[in-house]
Structure formats: structure tokens, C-alpha cells
Length: 448
Image (cartoon, rainbow, N blue to C red):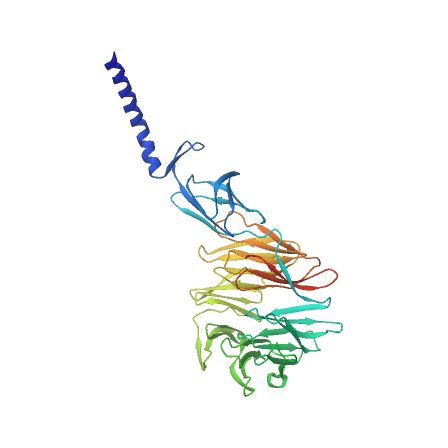
């Protein structure tokens, strides 16, 4: 009897081994049983990161007892609803998809603060515009009425302000790359503001202002600082590109029949046009007598604008039609486009639509279409987000290619409709003009 019982037990154990061993092998190799599909499927991995870290993770409303950053393994291949929560921050939520034998990386998540820390730099009810220097140490701003009417510069280190002009309303202004000079233009007047030797700690800091209107001549169509030489300005006038030397105040003619130009990596890229024949040519910043034609088809048009990231990422607008140069040919991406900007991918837009062309998969995607006008559209630095303003709101729109949907998140609500925002190059803070009774130039913290 005992022998029989032992045999039965051993038989059951052996049978259990035979039944469970395939499952154990499948399990060890990353397979899981899908009760919906009634079969075994190879699993995938979800890699989650957020800025800031420490967010609670919910997958299909179930709390994962870990915090970002974190990898969730052995997930069945299907769609999931992922949610990230952190106290003091807006909840992030989106649908993601897991694929067999692949890692789905959701590493772009920015958790926006519920109440952003803010700092006020300037208070004046007539504050109309501002321009931050490239190193973010000075702010030029304009006041369009009252006793303080004019153009001012605030030095953030000393917190001291100097008035440059009683005049205001400069429609074009631009800091030099070394943050020591500002080009200013209003109608047929043009100036360069020299801050090279300005000591803001002095009771009466000295500023040199040079009227360059006579040297430029007629109002210019386009002007850019030399990115490495503060004594050189390149400008386009009557379809001719010139160089103005701010030491000798001599202007040099460089190239005729130019419709637009773009300076990138010590190269001046120009679209030239004679008759209906349009070309892309380049000049080296320090070999300006050497002109080379680039291997690129350019569609004939009247008005052009160039957008260049590198030699493989060149786009241009021709009469509001956006083209991408691929293998030397112009590929039409879209019509009725106003502007574009490169990051890893190409962002482009008009007043009511935001699009992205994803370079890896060569896909055009419409991210949003609205009825209210969009403004201040730009890539948020080092991220997969786009920032824009609409009516009284500043919004962030995520555009990670792997997501199933592109959600927008409201970051800030203006007291009044504002059309001026700016942000620093590291994606940490936003500067805005806002205020009900009194206008303020504010700094809003996005990431600490």
C-alpha cells in the first residue's frame, strides 16, 4: 500500500513536472500567458524617466510601488495607460504601447509645477517689449509712454538700469553673440549700442551709441551678427548681401541676387535667384571671396526663408510652401506655412496649426489644430516638447514620436492677453510680460 502511494505521488510529481516545465521555460525566456488572446506571448520592457524624478507610477490605474526612473519588465505587448504623479506637480498621463522583445522608452516626461516660482525684474505699466542677452545676464527693454519712456538695459548682476534712448518702438533689435552690443532699427534709422566698457556699478555708467544709418543706407531686409566677431554685421539690401565692419565702418559687397541667407557653423548659406533659376550657395565666414554652389534643388519663388541644422537637415520656405532637401531634391512637406525650427526633428506651423516632420520615420504629423491664434511657438530646449501661447495661456505640447496621442498641458495663465514670452537656452525658466494693474517682467521657473 505504501509502495502504491509512493508511486502515485511520484507519478503526479512527474506529470506536474511535464506540465509545468514548458511554462517555466517560457517564463524564463520572457514569455507570459495572455488571457485575452489565450496564448503565450513574448513580453517587452517599459523604461520610464521623468524630470524631476520621484514620480509615482500608475499603469492602467494600478499603482506600481516604485518611483521614476524605473523599468517595468515582462509586460504583454499591447496598449497601456501610463500616469505619473508627484506632489506639487501637474499629473502626466498618456497612452503607450509595448512591443514584444523591445524596450519602450518614455524618457521625455516633464512634470510641470502646479505653482511656478516667480521673480519680478521690472515693474512699469507701459512696459511693451524686452530682449534677453544670450548669456542671460542683461535685459534690454522698451517703455512706450510715461516719464520713463524709452529704451533701457538692466544688468542682472548689479540689478542696475541705464536708459539708452528716450525714443522707443524699435522693430528690430538683436544682441551680438558676445552680449556686449545691440543692433537697433526703427524705420530708416539704425544704431549699434556698445556696452563693451560699460560699468553698471558706476553711478553714471557710460554707453557708446553709434548711428550706422548712413553706412547701411536704405532699410535692410535681413541682418545678422557675425557669430564670432562683434565688429562684423552681415545684411541683405536690394537682393545683395553686404558686410559692415564696425571698426572701419566700411561696407563690402559680397554677393548679388540673394533672396535670403542663414549663418550656421561659420558658413553663410544663401538662396540666390536669377530669372526663374534659384540656387543654394555658400560662403565661408572668413573666406568671403570663395563662393560654392551646394548640391540642392531649389524651387522657384519670390519670398524665401532658410532653416538649417546640419548638412542633412536643410529646409526652406518658398512663398509659404515648406520644402525639405533630401538627396539634393526639394520635397514638399506642406503649404501655407509661416515658420519652422529644427531640433532633432522639424517643427513648422502657421497661426492655427502645429506640425512636426519626424526625420527617423520620415512622417508628417499634425500635432494640433485650433480656432484661436497660436503664438510664440518653439521647441522647448533639450526635450520632446513644444511651447506656445494661446489667448491667456502658456502651454506645453508633447511630441514624442512613440506616443499614441500628443497632449498639451497649461503651464501658466496670464492676467491679460500677452504676446511676448521668452525662455532660457537650458529649458529652465520662462520670461514673460504680465500684469493687470501694472505690467511686470517676470521669470517663471519650469525646472529647478
